[in-house]
Length: 313
Image (cartoon, rainbow, N blue to C red; front, side, top):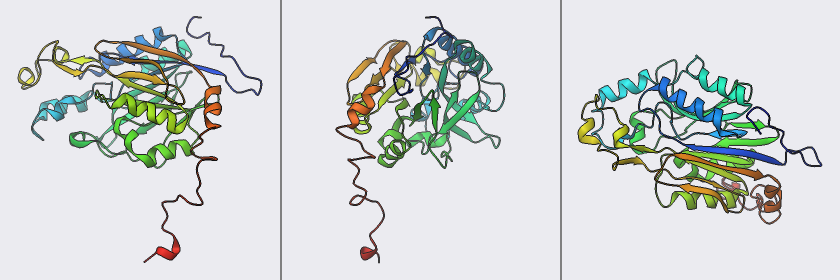
């Protein structure tokens, strides 16, 4: 079936039965917004999926140097990041929006977003199958040295988008270690949780599998593939900070997990590529027969973060 010709099966009760998802472990053109947007657009056009997911801050790249340089010594790096960050309300994402419309696909694209005040945010932008900006999620708390470039996200409600009856949301990287953020997603009825990340650790994929079992949801973790040779040498100290092909900024760790924790695809490590799967959405209800974190297994009568009145001081 060619892009734009999706005819998803529908179950007897009118709810979508399947969803095809592609997680793109690609290499951005480091600190070049326009070129990286074109990379993303080509992947959307060729993915052959109803939902195409990209890594954390894929456009214009994850600011890896904040972990390698002394704090606040990165003036020229930061200036280039600002200049190549994404104005979501402008035309910066038009090639991806056009590709989404032509393919009839939804896109979840990680970007560094430039606000009107020039503060930067680590953002997932949702692009609908008609090319519209359908929503965004800003990372609530940048991790460690990330705070030197990104502001705290100012979302008042974690974003969930509806893709033909399937609720999809994102928690970015270590937001997935925030128990209340996960619970908020479960409470919002998320069916598919996207986890774009820079985390290459051995612990990351088990984290995705735990969340898939805890929430009885599908989880899509997607990481970039980037080497030292991909970093432009006209940036100050680039040669000292980064080596060549054997100096990995990100080896990749992209994986797709089913409700209950089964690995459906991946992890893809050590190369660029696309990890894809077709989701049998009936597995969500089947899993929640045993464990429903916001239903029969919730016990809000016992478990609450509100201090009981008799214990108040």
